[in-house]
Length: 293
Image (cartoon, rainbow, N blue to C red):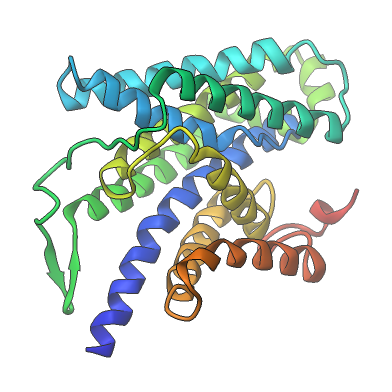
């Protein structure tokens, strides 16, 4: 019985860990291209899930998800062009304040559009009572969808940055934005592309996990904090490490429920973040340069 319970906690941790991993990857994609820490990243997950729920009222589920991803990507591009592009050499503090402000604006707009009601997409396969037995634990097929989708996104992002022309240009922009501009690279468009990619990834993750975790206008703030913790844990700028860090963090949070009351679950987030900042500011897999001011 104890082994089955531990396995159930592990499955739950992997489920939430996939969300944190995708949010952390979104942080890193934008950070690599711009040096910006985008605290509106969690709102992309919320927008994806909420938009898909609305579109599913008139469209089949696959089209609703594709439409939600497209809409969220457009919003990501709009945010970059409206709030980021016109700034000339902004300070880190200014950018943090701006992205937090954008997050508040998006959240309040979502409240006006969708209200406070908790919503969810239907399960992609099966339903809420359908489950697969794995070592005595009951696993929803939607969990497999979430893990599989995250793995696919990781593979595609890795391939994009390694082999695609736009991906290599974004890496050059991340390495030295001034030099990339002098070489004729469209650095402004590359920054917009970074926001579009991170928004699309967050939206897809929001759609896939919506049947399990549900979605509401206010979930973005918590996801942003946990995604930032994951990005720091893996090392800012290291997208692949943020995936491993997300899974570890999700499992840690899941097992903490067996020790702490559920109301104190978020304490784990703050404790982990503070411990990392004190002990190893560059993260577990980050370069030492990441910890420099």
